[in-house]
Image 1 (tube, rainbow over the protein chains, first blue to last red):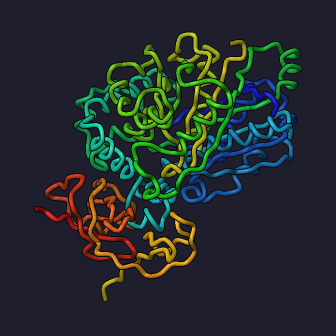
Image 2 (image 1 turned 180 degrees about the vertical axis):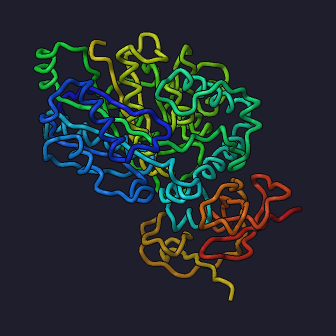
Image 3 (image 1 turned 90 degrees about the vertical axis):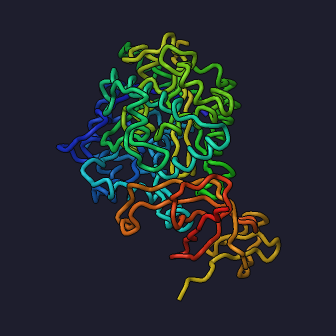
Length: 392
Length: 109
């Protein structure tokens, strides 16, 4: 496998884009990433596009080909990938594979979703398709419901954590407030979180990420290409992709021995730590899949940032704040930045690259290694990426 | 007519599963027979769905539960009611199946 670099990233605002079509959102992100990378778009050898519910909510398919055409990319293989909320991460990994395997020197990954024009009921029905509809979906369970079930299992194992779980929301909302791309940054108190309306007991409104539109993209290149390219343009050092791992977990809820952990995450981080020799203690920050407040706690334990049962305490004690020992979701995460489902995995890469370049609005001091974590469905798909500042 | 119990069990190892399964998750066996179950189990977790998709709107506000049956299968279904709130570990009983979904009632002491 060849060394792979992220030469450029681009993103739309995450939020409501009533005047842009789903393809326009994706094209805007791709164009921003190409401009950021300062590459010739004709050098592109492949495009991977992550999207989950575009067909259902916008009635538009063949997004990869449409976006490639509108972005004036050459007629190269353009592929849409779907893995529920991990679709963006999977697109990134496939672009990485294309370059790492030597198929091409430049590959573009883009993720996009457009959801805010639909009713909450329509969005809920569309997202529910990420469950096994025979085993789980038939019960009437929703995704907030899945994490409501997880929350109660976590409390039954480790004791009452409401106040500490609220700390995750308070932190991420505050981080989102200073991220110009974020949809729902805010200064909120734990009391406000605990008084917001119940959605899926014990989860409340502020425990849930918003419904979002948005797109994010990354340009991945080989080391040979970037060397020549840097020589030509003399722009800032790119970010190296140390590893990109995708795993497949159990696709239905009863297959998990506990909802306090997702095997797909545990296996993905184990593989990336083993293959790179980098461990959780070496990470300077993490952008992880906090679709719900409790998810950040489960993920932080699965990733090995903190011991089992300690995730909520760590958040409450400020150890995962921007200035803490291991900042989690300095972007505001899905809870505050938003969750345009197919775009989320690439939105995380965008945030990580900004951190590693040292120009993030919530900059982590001396950030040189960051991990992104993107989880799909009821734990059926996971992608983790390990990124490093190239001069580190 | 009430819906029949859709559970099956692996002919080789006896593990229970749902009828739409193609292979036994325990031993890999591919042959199944109809299973008998008393429908008694323990509540593993539960939540109340207050925002559902249109397909479930007729149910209003309803509780979804994870239950481990005594015969060794984990099921996702609904509680017939969630007031008073049940406690994890409570004994539950399947009272009926609706479109392959088990409906549980909490056996209050």
